Image (tube, rainbow, N blue to C red; front, side):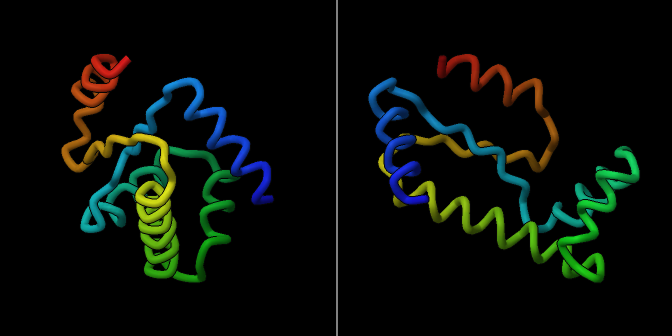
Length: 101
C-alpha cells in the first residue's frame, strides 16, 4: 500500500541510497527472454508464459514493466543510475556499480 511505499522511500533517503536500474534495450528484449527461457527450468518458463499467450505478448508485458519502472524512477526522490545492458558486459556494469559504493 501507499503508506508502506512512502515509508520505504523515506528509509532509502535517510540511508543515502541510490537505485541501480539495469535496462534491457527494447530491441534486445525478445533475445533476452528467449535466452532466459532456454536456460531456465520449466517452472520459470511456466511463470513467464502467464505474462501472455504469445511471445509477442510476453515481450510487450516486459517492455511495459520496464517502461513503468523507468517512469517511477523519475518521480520518486531517490537518486538513480540507469545501466544499459545491451552489450551484456555485466563485469563492466558491476565495476561501475562498485565505484558508486
